[in-house]
Length: 391
Image (cartoon, rainbow, N blue to C red; front, side):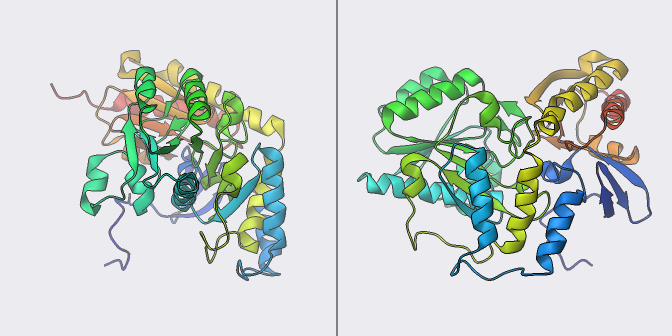
């Protein structure tokens, strides 16, 4: 019997090696990776630049603490600031932690403005993490209910409800709006550019912070270093993790303007966040993603996947919607979704299903055109072979 807590429903596959867009299991069977560890290995498995950076740093110094200056952390911070429009950064270990930093930052910002019960606006279908603050910001009653009482201080609204935004102006305690530019766990649903612009205008009028959770959309996933750069709407707070370390745990909360100085000494801290080893890995990622030709691969790979999908789909009505941005692909299907992941694994392909009936594809930027076509073809065959939904 496994000693691991039963918090995951795992498939009976164990991967032991990876290279690029390919994984191998314990039997040596190859699998085409269309998931990238859920938007983590955006540069593929064992990317040589990241691997070399980790090996070199591990042979010198792994950890000290944030009681002392960490040159690699300062270097990575400067690289991220240069690549974004942010002005300061706090490093941590994960997306949930980075969201917790943003929540604390927003509350501190509110208290500094004499708002006694600072409140953050969040969206239906949102996912921000499973720690208590991030969970309170996350949609989904079944996810939150077993851990009530929830942390207070959140107002939830429907996405794309422009009229609903106007009603928020009457709320006295709002200090920030927290959204994902593309709602990943919510079914790979992009927020429209018009809606994000409306949020930006509202936050500017009300002196609220606009906070983008780019844990899943960031680090090249959507065809830019961060999705906001492609969408043309700049947040005050930028939250990132997942692909930032290409598999090595690291998260970051970046901020600009008043938000950049909201947190002061003693307001927050971390033991492992921003370690020399984590920052070496992330620096290699950020510098690799500085290549515009690599970022441009997101749309090229997406197009090859979709062309192959449509070309091999026997019954187009089995796909009811295709959503996303760059290499965040959501394929909503009108077939029973429960067995699709297992069926894909039988074909040697790694995919995911989210929000009930949406196939989520998150392939790496280093996937070849032929691999992209194979992925699209395989997904089409999985949909073709799925049973009809029972009447």
